Length: 393
Length: 67
Image (spheres, rainbow over the protein chains, first blue to last red):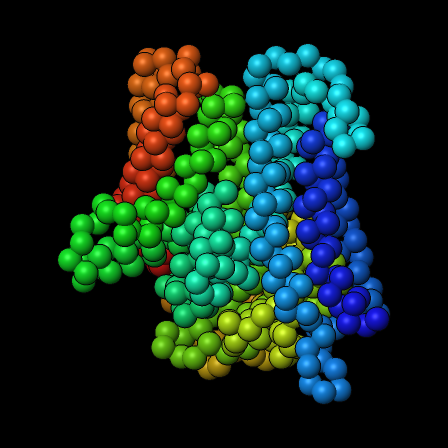
């Protein structure tokens, strides 16, 4: 029974994604279901983070040392997300077509359910945000598969390409996992940077990493930069079917909806990068240690919903390890889950008020002497003159 | 400053491409599969150039933590 429940909890987000898809298909005010589920997740995550008695342990192992996670089932669950994401995107494209074609509001039967045909402008906005939010949450499955090799890595690229961010798979594994906590990793946010600036810089920075990687690799191979072997170009080309379909369905409106969906999904990816390492510092050339990542408490909604990505310390120690095998390793802990912190970082002063005491504790209890010196300069530069460590460069 | 310049350049370039496509009347053919694929390729190439322009103009400066 325990093993069944451990595995079941990882179907939490796939269920929400599916419900979001159902909402867009049903139409009418159901298109807002995805947004409502996301907001509900923020509230529940905040509550379960704050109530410390509701804790979620790692998946764990039985008395024989075997993991409670069922590898076959959980891998199949991740692979199955791709057709669900495609269906979610197609449902949005269908709504775009209805909106731009002026299909009148009516109804039809689909699998025994009454589905609204036609969509108002307000409902089109709801469908776009709902679909984009859950396409964005799908990034966690793309992330997990990006740590594999072979066909599943390619699947991760196709998953990310639905939101125009296929470059992430290479940049995450070959840049972020080697350079985090340092300016050489664009996905790590320094102190004082807002999520909005980080979104921009991290998005372009990760693409830039793959661009340079391919420039150097193709030069070594004696191949031209503009070629089918270029994985930077190929990554963007993987998004071509999405662009074609949105354009065909709705012309400029369709393209606008696609850009909005990409922007929301890409923003969610950068939110995760932001939360996982915000303000943490590592000296160049020094090893990556547990204290270079934020763990995020034991909030069930985050650990279930984000398939244990919140166990960042162990993930960065054993990047190739499946999520159901990750352990608690004593990384610094923000104490709140990702959904809850997502709401905070949207308002930068609220985020700073939340994270500064935690960074002050990190500076005191986790940072090495060299890291403390950098932290003091970074605090000064961020204008955080009230931090215990603060020194003019 | 360079980041702002990069974003401004991207906006200007994208606007020019958009204006040319509007003048060509591509939207009138957006349901035609051949036209749609051709136009989508133009969008994709525009995106690649936009991203490249950001690298070229913003450079390393945007990524340096200590100014």
